[in-house]
Length: 201
Image (cartoon, rainbow, N blue to C red; front, top):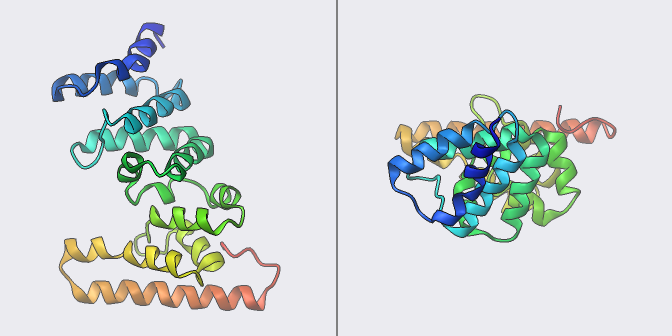
């Protein structure tokens, strides 16, 4: 990658909020870092978010995708860095995280980062998705391990609501609630009957 492009991307914070066209052009340069310097790019994006000069949601889907792609490209390391920003109660990072961040890492990475800490479990639940037809693996892990915590369970339950609003189908909402409840009970029974079983299977 051209070092000049890397420098231009890194210097973004000096220019504050940009006009839409200029912002788009900067994003195209930034995307060229994804394959070669994803962790550096993610650090820049998170700093810009904290500074309030980069707002990927809800103004621009392209920006949101750039942030998401940077997290995915960095694997567990990048996911943990963004979760750590959430721990600092950064409102800008929380808004940008939406509901996609919780499921942007493998269950092992999530489990390791939480390390039995209920506050971290609640934080992950607040940015977790319930999944599509099947319960998302991270949501399943949270239910299995921290489902008795009211804040965790309410966060996961609220993750179902946006689907209901978009579809305007009350029966879909009831179906999703039933699905989560059923899977919760089934996985709880499995864990109880097999003390050494992996709760995420």
